[in-house]
Image 1: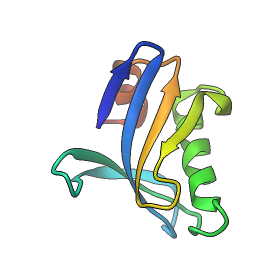
Image 2: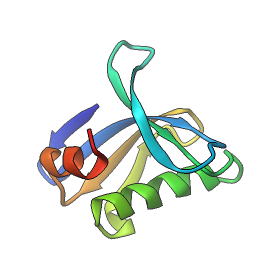
Image 3: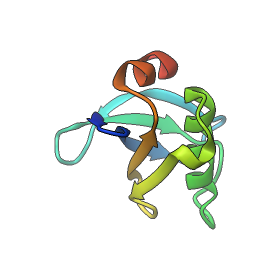
Amino acid sequence: MIIERADGVELRIWAKPRGSRTRVTGIRKGPDGLDLLEVALGAPPVDGAANAELLEFLARQLKVPKRSVVLSRGASSREKVVQILGVDRNQVVASLGL
């Protein structure tokens, strides 16, 4: 779910668009059996709105600039990989309440 990199972390996410509000809802197993952070998104999966909501939410929660949060895989999938620059695993765990 959280993979440390030299310049930050990589976060594996299961997105749930069209939620009542954007929030972390828990941890679930992905199709490959690995843990994914489950995030409900208050935006629909139309024209990239849900992806934009996810990136803004993570930037806000982790207190990093939006440019430090990059969707690296899964733009059209529920399973996503997001790179977050300038943070470490402990910061992600504390900021997202994991």
